[in-house]
Length: 609
Picture: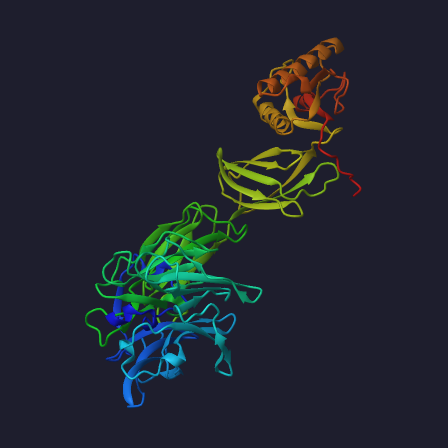
């Protein structure tokens, strides 16, 4: 970059673009940097891309002044990008904007059909000498609208002033945020980056991007991409040379950590204006490094490798699939790389450019899945983020309802434990349904919880289960006054009143509900089977009720909130009365505890609504 250009912002006609590259494409991969064929002995640099074309600036000779002397001005040209990222030979180009004033870098918003172009003020361009020797020529931003295959000028961008320059804009994908460079008063250095947001059709007052971006030196040629990555050049952050290319994240007016490239993109010279090509399989930037054809040249970044963020999802739940093995096979079927997805179902592939690959994803509980990645020039190029869907061989589906009327419960939390470890969570939809992937030959505990309801669990095993789907129906008791909760699996051994382990888990549920809802008061009833005398069973049921109460008290529940009564064999739930021959399982159904909510601030819903 011409050193004299650095003395006045007007003469810093920097490159930038609306399209952009993400750091994973060009970082941490092998690249080659090549001088582009469009370069001339004068200054040339890329500006942006537009519908498969590279828009670039090039110095041309112009006659002007009374003595008809020739001087150099930047005009805007376009050239078709080849499938491999290279450019046609010099001469195979078309003018875009050519006037008698300086045209600098531009940005194009595809969504709005708007172009923002750096230009010098017309009345300051009629000079006798070479324009680059004229100091302090100010720059502004001119707005255009796409029309009839060309561009129609619609006016100057707001906030312009003859006292300072505004230049090299870059626009967000939506067209409602514009970042630009200015030396307006109040900045941190020679030139700073500013942004403005469009609200209600009006651009708001520009905001300096602060010391997270700007330094005491010069920051310029910003390039904002769709995912929020912002590229810019800086001479105040050290690096390899005068100007280096840096990048950060810019979203909602906030910036992230500022990073730079660790490869040959930056050099001992000035490097600026990073412009990615279509599909981000290559990029362009400007540099005055040694070995060029002119003052500034367009250089092409051609990655030898391509990085792809792969996300593996279940076709059944659309949730991430962790610990999936990904084999990368070349066209001959040889495995060249292996990867594993993380807990978020992601992994980063690093593949050689110019080849076709086949991905093979495998995991227990899923059918094998193959997917092609075509990095050849003639193929359908891969995205930087690829999604691979795997079909689960075993699936769990269920519905959670209110036991009082079987109304579906939306937003119930489903927690899934596999072999004692929580492996998944789900929320029920508006109809109370949920679904999850499960694996064969495993033990599962599935819990269902909802606000103002008593949660419950089910256990099952997939040992020996054929591929297919399991369905479970969860009925939850509402925690309303008057609700009687008949817990079927708080059982006692015959003639015993100690709490069995299987009963403890259910009692823990009761304790959790009482702890979460401190206004609830309950009555618990102890019941026995018919064996033994009525008097003995009455006392046994009282001891069972007391044992249950003491268990809840040990869990931290205030004793005053619990009334415990024994009802002996007076309320059998089946036909197993005195003199009836019943199995042990039948008798056990009668050895139980029933809870009734006596008081609660939880409002009971009208079941007819």
